[in-house]
Image 1 (cartoon, rainbow, N blue to C red):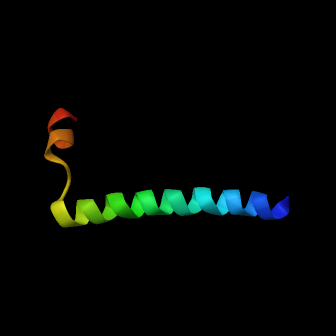
Image 2 (image 1 turned 180 degrees about the vertical axis):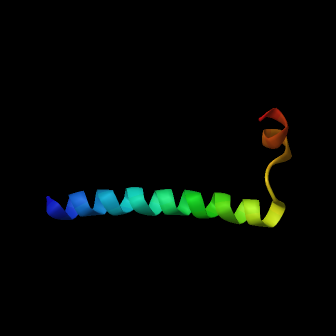
Length: 40
C-alpha cells in the first residue's frame, strides 16, 4: 500500500517536473510566445 502511494506521488512529481522543464526549455530556445505577449 505504501509502495503504491509513494509510486503515485513520484509519478505526479515527475510529471510536473517534466512539464515545467519542457516549457522552460522551449521558452529558452524560442523566447516568449508572441501570441501570448500580444494578448496580455
